[in-house]
Length: 236
Image (cartoon, rainbow, N blue to C red):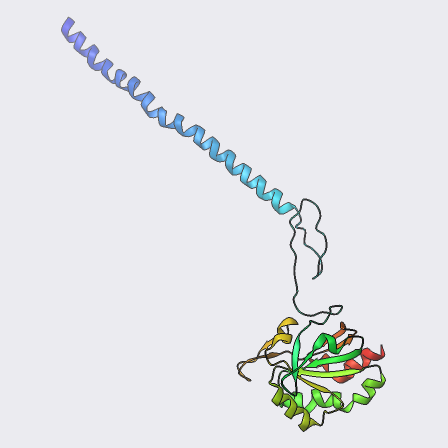
């Protein structure tokens, strides 16, 4: 009976031994994963708190197009406008008048004088020939009586075209016909118009500005660039 009893004891204790030896092996991965889970959870909480803190702070933007001071400790975001604006000085750019080589400096043209500089997309084009230029020609005397000493029209055309257009419109003695042959003045004012689809090249936007001693005091775009708007600005 003694061997049988020993065998039975051995067979009965074997599973117990197996279970006792297997238990630590099964719980080891769980114990190893626990710190990693805790670290991942802590990292997630920190990320959420950081996101909430960033979104709760109001961003500081510099107001206006031409400057301003951002509060200390905030990001500075500055919007810069290149387009000419009221209060700006005219750029010192040469344009042609009459023929190539006969240049006029735009800033010098209005130095010490009050006047009007208006631009059209193209010489001989319908609106420019039927309304824009004729308006300044017909109102030239009234505009000069209101204080305009110089009235000049500029377009991205060659000087021969501008001279021919001026002759066709009888502009001599009323409006000076300036050719921005290389588009330099238009680019300096940031008034470029992509008219390649209709006119085959970059032209100028339609605008008019009242200038006093080289400084832009009134700027009108599109429908506000015609003679009546400039006359009203002169009389204001």
